[in-house]
Length: 304
Length: 227
Image 1: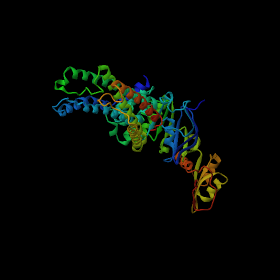
Image 2: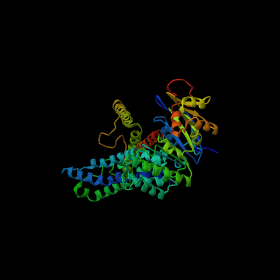
Image 3: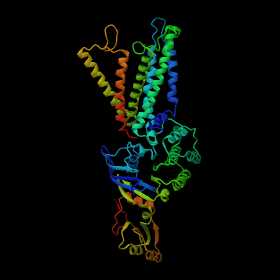
Image 4: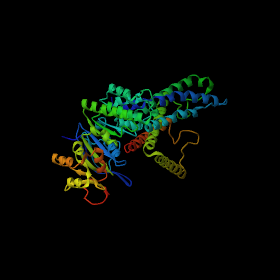
């Protein structure tokens, strides 16, 4: 099956800066994918290129089977919700009305309902909205457009926890009813982790991790407890991180633990904590995808 | 609905910018009528320039303010550009018609009873109704297209890009003046007749050709613009 988004050898250079460097990704249709990475990693550039708002320096980009740049057949089916969206001097209701003209699957009832949920008034000027309210407007347009490919770039900047939960709930509910391809860039990884079917991590313009979320959730476990027991369990296994403090030690073991391993850990008084998606992403962004060799140093952390 | 029409409609979603047009004519006319003086020929048509210049402002605003959200809505750069140009052309045609009608009234009333020449611009807008309509619409649209080009440059390349654009134009104008002076070309006839041997309709034709160049330049620029 043709992926909804297919990027091959994508590079974007700005004078002396390379925002994206030989990026290759393929995202299946009808999935929610997390696009994660540090500030300045290249996430926004990638999303802008996918939405036809920026041009690649080299490489191939296909969205819904065709290059998006200046391709209206694709552009009307792709929606990018940007944290830094610039609006003309219009009111909230006018922005929604304009969106309804361009978007073939626009749902006015959903838009009105989201306005209510976010406490936005249609008569309010966009320039008078707070940062969080502008984010809420972007989310409203992004969800009500029901675009086949919806790209969210830090969509909830400035939104409070309640409003963010509204976003997650409404996205999931609408996604269940009208499946589409969603690519969500966020720094609130653990908060949004439950949404993701796959995760792509970009660091300094390169894809450093591209895997199903389920695989990543069980990919590593932190083992803490008496040093001897920790070393015994970790012996011969790939390890990401190793810390030692007196007689206590903590390591991050890569790979699944068998029931026997868990029983050994329990009987040795070891504490097992699965690494959260955010912790896995931090490791990936730091370039720590290779195991760390065992040393006797007091505290040690892998570096890129 | 065609995307060009949607873009034109999107530009009109906030009508305030365009409603200013309704106020410029009576205000500039009032200023002209008060300041024209008692001595003939009572020509106050210079004040009409404000109406024409506002079209450049409209073109600039249409692109500068609306482009980023327009692309987010799903329009291509090409559709956004020509949809906005379509709006400018429609406004120019309607405004030209209004100017033509007001010129006819001015003629019929002997200059509004005050012998004022406001809508009868010597040489350019002083012929038959169709010539007035055509010339005013072409000039208004040319200014709109010129403003759009500035809007694109400002939106994408900011102050530096806009200043560079102005500098290049200034160089072209200076070069043209130097060539005319060195070659001793007579741009205007000694008896105050047509410029470079052109009638008002001839000038309209030249401006129309320039407008095509402006549109081509603006389109080539917006195709490279990112938001």
